[in-house]
Amino acid sequence: MKRARFTEEQIIGVLREHEAGAKTADLARKHGVSEATLYNWKAKFGGMDVSEAKRLKQLEAENAKLKKLLAEQMLDAAALRELLSKKW
Image (cartoon, rainbow, N blue to C red; front, top):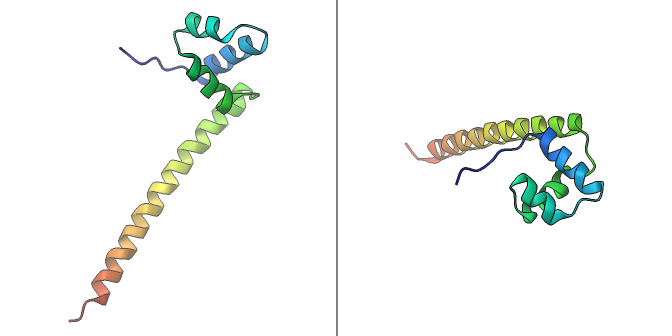
């Protein structure tokens, strides 16, 4: 089964419906997701505006990029330390 990808706007729209009083089971059925997915979205995006959600996604991408750079630098440093510690 193909996994549906929802945009931040769509997720926040669904959460607004939930805040307006719609039942979780009805929303899950209507949008084709599980109730657990709705609760996960609520934990992550609850109380956010669309602009805040986009900024969050941008920061997460930047954070992943920085973590990758740090891991590469640490690997390079470890390789250099190992090379220098060997006796010639």
